[in-house]
Image (cartoon, rainbow, N blue to C red; front, side):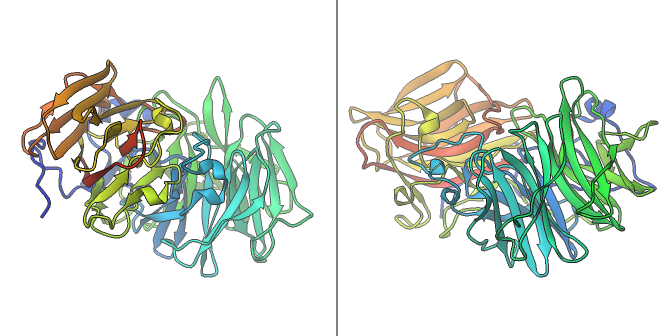
Length: 540
């Protein structure tokens, strides 16, 4: 049996749940606008009990959201940039509690070799925003990459396996595509060409969704940093949702409508206005909830070290037009921070409890770039992750270290990530441990040189090094709260932890929120390895 981790917080963090809530709008719904956010800031997130939720529903990096409804189930996706596997897929039964069920792109080198471990040349790019849709028994995801084009994949089941990628348009500069089938069953796609003044176009797709018809595209309009395009058919109208940006107002949501997909989307309305502290809610999917009300599941355009969090806003329909959030006198909506639950609670485990006892990783874990497959193993030592050390692409550059296994972090009251490492396989020149990273990094780990082991800790005050007596195993821990100040600690027995005095401020960078991860590399020749017993990340 694996060693129990002591030194935990006084409050038990076990058994908590990953929660994400779709905002419910009923006649009895309580709506709290953006100006009340500060007053509510300490009352939690997601399902706060008594039939209410609080935004953000997912206080973690959920950039570029989309959502669709299939029967009584809801499926959402998030962009993953350079992380692999790519395009995270989530599931919910109530638009409140969400679980990660898979990824749509198992091998991101299908997109480009630049996303492989030996290139690592797509930070902040890679898998961008997309859309998930269901049609005649099949699930489809379409997404763009900044440098390669627009891609599509499909699956019979939402948790996969997903098909190899089909490139619909091999051209840089396209973003945020979305599909729809018109009343005749004809597939269409919308996308924006941001390299040419953010022009938005409609494309006719082939019946098998493998190509764009030669007569495409149809020009819609352009301007103001267009992105987040989504298509919806509702009560005889086709709606094109998108967001625009101005320096004075930030990013806000717009909608156009048409009676036909090949007719001009000439009617237009503005849907949202930014208010102080609301972080520009703007990109997501509009669906009908289990309570038959409508909701906008979205990510924010701004975010701190946690990234672009996910929230839920009510949607009402009036005279054939949607209205989002807390509607003001001029008909434009603003952010809402609390509302009634759309359905019964159905919590799923949150965080990560990865013991490396299976032949696959938790779906919450993603590699930084496509990993070097022969340099990690779940079978070399049963119940452990063996990470073999190899050199970074650039000496001294942590962003060029291959095979870093990561997971998103949360902005909640209490967070703790712990790992235990068997150091028996270390060789001189090796480094291994626990890290936070985006564009910058903080880490606590072990290095070996001259046959001796050293604890090394990188914080905002630089690197601290502590000689270690000969040991076989070490426990490493990071703890942080809503302020995002990580405190590193270590233990030589798994019971008593010593805390490093200096802290590390979690950071956002390269269009991503902070990540916690496991790393192993060498400054010297390859050949050594580190065995990781588990990665436990708990939060509340």
